[in-house]
Image (cartoon, rainbow, N blue to C red; front, top):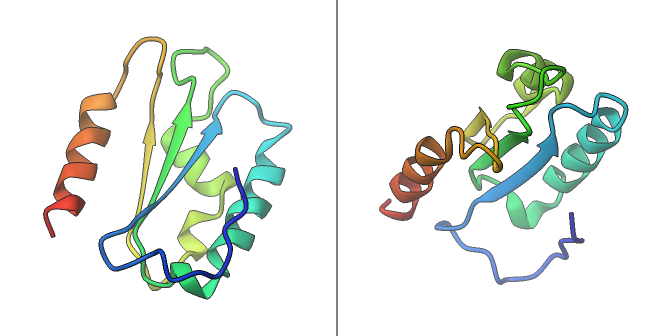
Length: 107
C-alpha cells in the first residue's frame, strides 16, 4: 500500500480500496494497523472503503466474517465499508466487486 498524503486530489467520487491476503494470518495485524492509520487521514473522510480479501480459493483463507473481525472493520465509522472475499486466480467475486465499483461511480 502506498503512502497517501493530505492533498486535494480526492473528491466525493473517490473510494479507498484495501487488498489483503486472506490466507496470510501472520500479516493481517500489520495490514489492519496500516488500514486504520490510512483511515485517520482527513483527506479520506467519508470516502467509501472497499476491503478485498484475496486468495479466497485457498483452504486456509479467512471467511469474510473472519476478515471483518481481524481487520476490525466494525470500528470504522463515518463511511460506507464493504468487504468481499475474492480470488484473482479463480476470478471469484470479481463481478460483485465490479458492480460495487460501478454503483459508486454512478453516484
